[in-house]
Image (cartoon, rainbow, N blue to C red; front, side):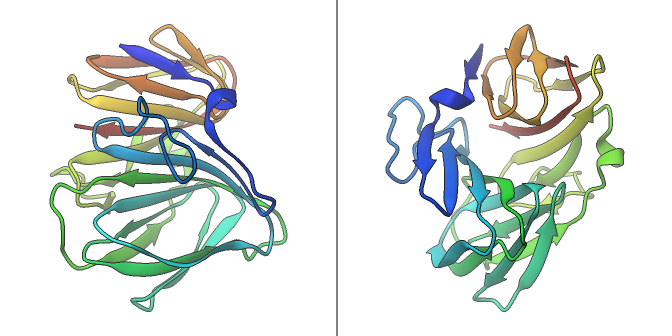
Length: 231
């Protein structure tokens, strides 16, 4: 089963400093049919104005992955971590027993990003944060694992969930595939247009996948993709 969730039908809205769209129920957006997808709980598409951002606030028992699409985001947290994550790169925060953090756009231009929340396999554990650059050439033409809690994914940023966050870039006309083995998947083009098992999706559209063995992806124009594979 594959369901297209067009960008224009997503929840969210423009708050001035933040223009956001929610693929799943979040904040003031409530949809009982879109609470989660497997262990994937939140996928927000955020455009953050220059010089603004999210002030310090708490989290607990959630794996939070930020994929920066344009600009950069600056992280600060109660563990003393600070870092700047640029477009194409990824940061993870495992909230564990509890952490406070802030995310600011310190740039002179807007920052566009995906924020993805995945439920952990178990509650608790010491919180942690990490970030890593992932050069786009390394994922040209195929999916590369960016963050994972699955054994063997040693080159990925760690999370505490049996899930993967993957990225790929495809040139127009290029094809790739990803094997799911019946797990849940959620794919969003960060840029460009693709066809996934016959379903067309443009920038910002969500594709929810269930009970499929293989995803066949073809780019109709240059595309950048983010995929979550989860139980």
